[in-house]
Length: 426
Ligand SMILES: [Mg+2]
Image (cartoon, rainbow, N blue to C red; front, side):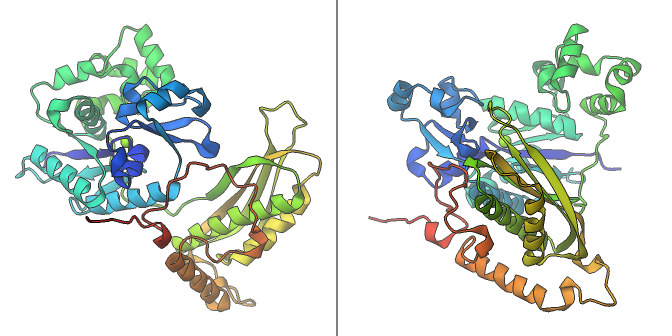
């Protein structure tokens, strides 16, 4: 049987790198990406890290002098751009393996089992070069006989320049050294509590952990922990998760840019999130029959507090936006209380099935066999061609003062014709 080989490809400083792709003049500049409502820094370019700025720092706390001196740029998070760039990276990676697990927005596991005839380090370098060429994004590649060791190798590649961003730990003579270099906090799957426990027991790095007795590990860290340690020893225990199950639920919710107090505004915001959730549903060719709406005030503020939620079953599974908008309105009327400053509203769709598996009904036409599907398909197509949300429901309002704050948002370079970058040749 072929020896298992897995590569973990991970984008370097993903959000910050996406911003730089379309702003070449920022290439060597320290830049940061801010959380929703421009609150804290969630992603940093290596140059910003070098200045000592940490993830999670509130934007307003960064020294104005520092910003000026080093020309630091801070951007609102542009999730449309990051999502699209992520899709491009994943698409590029499918060229290199028939088996790919998308692990997060900027990471994927690739099965390289059976590629023994190749030098896998060279293959990793090829992957890195291709992703850079096709998307403009820098990645690191870690290769190992298990997912956990691929993670270790990836971390090593990222932190050591001589690797040129690619490291294969599989048969490497220095595997022990590398494992000693990984402290317990940095092992994939070891949470903060476990790390503390391990340190209390004199285990400080990955190599020491591989030497602990199985029984002790299982007692202290359950079977899940034991599996992780076996993976560190080079015995694959975690399969690539290739079958994407239909989503169990879809949640669409965000905090408001400022407090919302009127029913009208609340209704508009809820309608907007609802519209997006149902769009997502259609994109995956699914229908849903349960809708839940939740809302809450800001529990960090010393103000009267209120939170509530309610749900509603549709008579038949649907992906027709107006069905859900009516239900949203109905629920909101039930749970909205005037006199509070609301911070958040959210929508959850559940009881999701694939369109083709949706139950039929003898007495009523279903979503699939009447005009509703045609109307939705048209609307999706127009929105796709004309840019996001050219066609919206009046229910979602037009002034949208409740939207989150995004004062430093970069253009949607890759998803909106209006925002496409302009190149000038002299
Ligand atoms: Mg990353």
